[in-house]
Image (tube, rainbow, N blue to C red):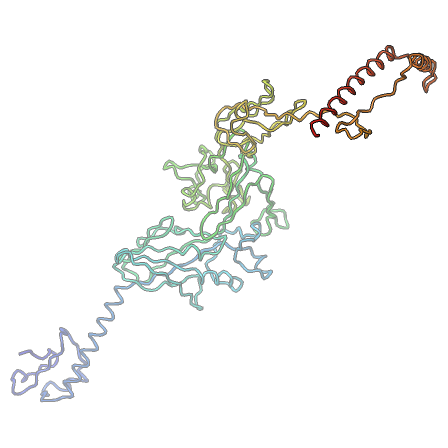
Length: 546
């Protein structure tokens, strides 16, 4: 038989007949108020329904409270605090807000070391952007269960933090922003604070393990949002001349980080200028070209530490003379751009990424503009020899895999069309007889080549006789007009004598035409023969017709 709790047992309560047994679930220890239950130690509990119900009620309530307390211990709340880059005070005072927008003047970005974390009346646009950012939480302890959450941003917050809710303290989570919800030109870095036991930073996310910090049921992770644009220079030689600025000064002429830095771009040296979008660095759709070489990749200068990682502005805390370390070319691609603090890489990179504030620090402030330049490689080139009439007419050097018209082919042009008397130029051909493939400015060159000029002969115009209508007496043959000649020899001599005496228009004597009479005689003889032939043919045709 179960016994009453110790607090309910009296001196004479051991007799089953004398007392009613009260059993209260599985509660092992219950402390009841003596004033409520035990008014006097000599009281005996008889068959009292009220006493039984009261004891049951108190026991159940205490069990509920115990379970509730146990549940709280096993859940931990996760909050995110933002640090952000913002527009300077003058911009905010002009009513334009603090949020850096895709088209904001980077010369007006605040250069203060103090990052925004405290809520201000003039930064409502920043808070609105924070409210729209979503987070992806993956529960690694629950088959990588994934969910998307929006942070709760209480109006009574004094700092820019959002709560992502409470989670099982015994699980491990991967937490990251949803990239498409990050406003451009901002990007996120997850290692914006000193290391904590419960957080492990990575490039694309941070890992949260609540069990590593059991002292607190509320963990806060700080992440950083800052603006960044990449300037893709046309060449290393002009990388230092892609932008300029003029640091503001105070009334007494001292340098200051506040005010308008008068940021200007030199577009003639810039291939592309792209700001971060969707929390990712943007790359140009096309690559620059240069005569004699081909584009290999993008790169930049950087000082490297012994572990081959680049120095950042955060490394200056040890006052190490970083500028005396060797400079390396570092690739700039989708792999290297994910390295944390890429926005804060050393700005003394041969003057390329300099955005110094001249306020006494040797590294300047955070650079929002990052300059990279092409890495070139020399490509093979081939010679196209143009041959005209078995002689070299022209030679053109073309980069391998390119056509003459391609910009990357070295800015070459096709030679002028050759010519040949009596012929028309038809184009260039890979075979001398013109039966091969045509060669044009679009033909891709992958080896040394010889091409030949191909011509078509122009048609030769034929001479035509001057014929006139003449009576034919029904003949089908026309009579050709001939010059008139005297038939009488005496008339021929008189005609010749008159021509010799007739002066020309310039009152000069005309040279007599030697043999003219002879020519006329021969002509008459030929005509008489022709006439006889025609008459004979006519008679034959008429006889055949009859």
